Length: 440
Image (cartoon, rainbow, N blue to C red):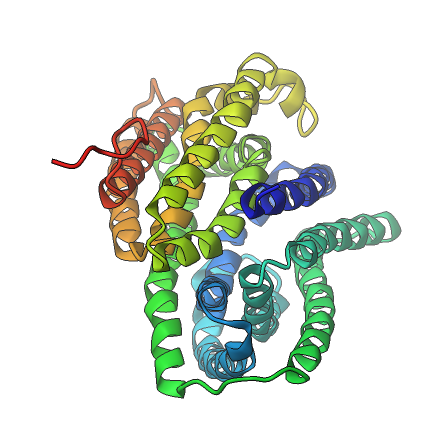
């Protein structure tokens, strides 16, 4: 079995188990927190994601890309420089957090300790990113599979155990739910740190080459900075989305509390179900970034085209059946969270949104691997701008409300996927059917 399918199959299997646990986590949260607190929990997650993105500086992507492109004899030197960069990133983010988080008004409705929990998350994420990036680039997919499974399993265990043993007030319950996320990240860091240290000790017994620090720093930042810009943009839009949706729904005539509940059901129920199969897309992305980077650096365009066809074929093979399931069995699936919920209608209407995102995720890996992160960023800017404009305009109409929001989201997903696809085919000199163009 070739490295692409072997890695994708292993990660997809582990991710299936992990996403199943994530599904159970959201069911537990929905039932333990209630509709209003569940909405508040989902509303703060974008802020947590934003902290994670800044703290990681996308070192996972840049380290994995460099490890895939370089000989094993250079890995020790490369990792040492990456860890020094991680220290600089962690210290910078911690200093910024001490000034910004205490004054962040979005956290005023939450437990005061939530701010300091976000501070604790910064160094954990930064150093985890280096270890995870190394294992991805060196194609140690078994370790990545264990990490993904461990994270979800630990969170569910902590969450279920605490809520079974104790009863909490509103703010404390949300704080405890967020705390389980941090505890699971600490456990993952301990596992990765141990495995990473043992592997580095083995490499030190082999002949190693020194590489120029400046060259490695430049190579890491050349990938990390634009990729972080892309992720920061996604995180900002993710953080803005709850407020944009609730504001649009309020303008359409819904009370603010009801708008928040509807957003909670959209994000916590429909999104949880719809993005469940995306574990396959993310597994493809994880495997493809180092493979595409290595193939592109060698000029092996034939293999790149073949891998792209395989990725699109896999996506079509799982994506089309699952969205059909969403369409015809939306109600029984959403009833697992809240009975007789409007989330079933949301899930049905979001079928195009989910399907096109399944295709867009592995194509983003291609853009990163062939050095087109800037293009990926601009695609996101344009598609998000169009999407947000339509979401606010149509969502504010009393006769559309959430239906208008979803129309805007669908249009954005289709636009993003098409721009990714056309850029990749042009760069690799492929036809729209992913065959090599004939020389003029």
